[in-house]
Length: 236
Image 1 (cartoon, rainbow, N blue to C red):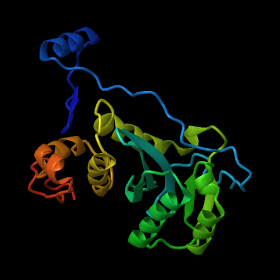
Image 2 (image 1 turned 120 degrees about the horizontal axis):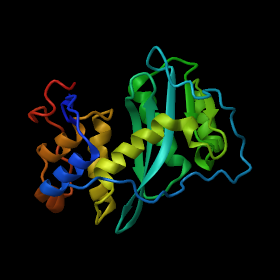
Image 3 (image 1 turned 90 degrees about the horizontal axis):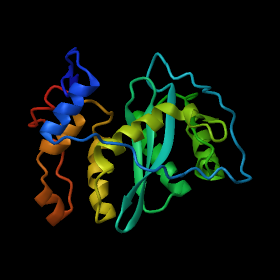
Image 4 (image 1 turned 135 degrees about the vertical axis):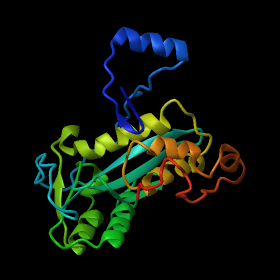
């Protein structure tokens, strides 16, 4: 069995787990219906799959993977673009918008580059969606001295590390919750992204940090992350 502090090595059975869940009123968080966000039906140039699922690297700033995910709200979709360093799983750049455009992915890449200033020759991997194949985005990569790499058509496993991050984030923070506004959804996503990488304490931190439900509902403003949270002390 496992909790936020790690694996305890307690042996149990599926029947015992079901019994405890029923007694405590617990239920599993499950993934919801998948929404396709990759528009690969275009005539734009596609880069070769240079990464080729070589997800293990020995230093930061060698390979970044990128992708766009979505969050449903009562106002419509909120799109979240992210850039992740394969070396340590750090989310080095992100951007959010109500529209999934080339400007969204360009902003995420710009923020990542401004934050980390990587050496030239970095491999920037993504799917072959029209946003990543756009001439402006490709020009941005060349301007930063980066090498474009793209997944094979319809193969999400070629970008598995980024897909995995989105999956955990949405199971923990998005699924089984309905956001009234895009701004409300952006608050939680922004807080998760600012913590840079997904770790076991993240969900606990988002539940017990200084901003409260009342703060979110009234002001719609993000209260900055604080190490006063007991779950998060020593995490940075």
